[in-house]
Length: 593
Image 1: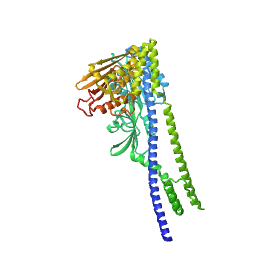
Image 2: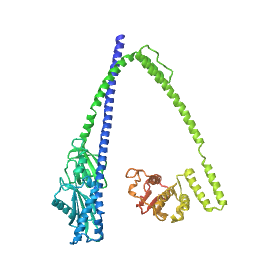
Image 3: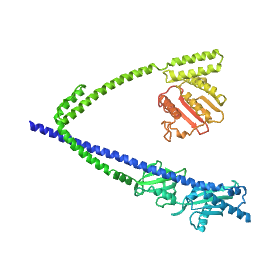
Image 4: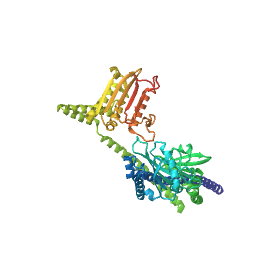
């Protein structure tokens, strides 16, 4: 008998230990995966922060370079040339003095310029058409080479009408050119060209600071893919291709030349992007390397837990029967059960934990029960304290009567319209559809109130092709919210008066209701009639209302019916509501709206 008990006990211990090992292995894998994902996310976040900082620094550098050319364009000599087109073209002594003044003025301005102090520009040259007027530089350069390079740049600039642009280097070791073209007026062919040449070293140094992983490359490129600077100095002036230009997200996976990259594309300014190419395997390996110590600790912890759990299991088998019996009683909702005192530290600890658990369970159940009763009482009190809408309408009726007796006819009409709108919104009957006549009454109530508010700034017209139209049905509160949206987003957006035109007419077996205004308008491409989100992911309340109304009409009458919108920013909006002449089943015949 004892042998059979021991065998059963040993089998139980072995099975429990095996289950524990499996659980710990699965738990270790789960924790490892979770930590891996967390570390990987942190690594990418740190990398993106570094890229964001570098992009900001490059943006400031580009702004400083552009600012220098604009500062030179505001010099007194350039202003004099704008006034007198022959300021630099004569052959007398005064012309020579004018050109010398330009050179001296340019040097004085650059002395106090941060771009010049930081030596971002290698040199700057100023041309009048193809004649060199002035040149200055911060680094030792060949004057003839500067003249050749800037001369070629000037010839290229004279062929197009771009007045401010940044040109890429043509080869490795080339310069980035920041150019500005100035004309005295747009009728004259004469132009002044300010050409600043900046080496790629400054940008390359910033890109190299991001090279913390093997196989990575970083580029500063224009939106069309042209490379202006790179971390390794290669591909200058080349195009990176559609694979990189087409990247839309900040972080995107792509295979380039057989290598899987994770590409981070960060906007520097309106014209330039910082592109970071990171081999996917490199980041994964780096993350796994960071986890080695954690993995070792997990293995040691799992081993210690297995040994400790096995010892605890051996001791717990003696109280196993009592524990099972007690748990059965608890499952039968006997929360008074308690394990006895065994005189053994391990057993007593189990008994104490179990007894404590049952006590807390009883307390939790009691607390939950009392909380539910308290919540029910609070809900009853809340409902009891709600304001009776009848009270509100009685007060409005009293004010309306007093206004009528006092001769305040406009106030009387406004209160009457407001009360009608409130009844439609608060009470409303159970009908999902009402007559068009009732709906247009709500519209008139609303427009009359708004006209009292905006006076001559708001004009509206309601045209009904035939009186019989008003007897057909329409879903409740379809036209009024659209008119309300027109007023709310139209009056403040136009300088003059807001004109709202509402037209009701027949169209074969359909009824068309048009709401047209000359308000702010919006980009219809941003409105998705099948989703409450706009293209950029944001949610607009007024656009959600239009979408919901469109969906409500289609649910009631079918796909051929609904709402169409014609609008352009600052050119007004036209909303077309299409409903059948009588209630129809979904998918009914008819031309789709």
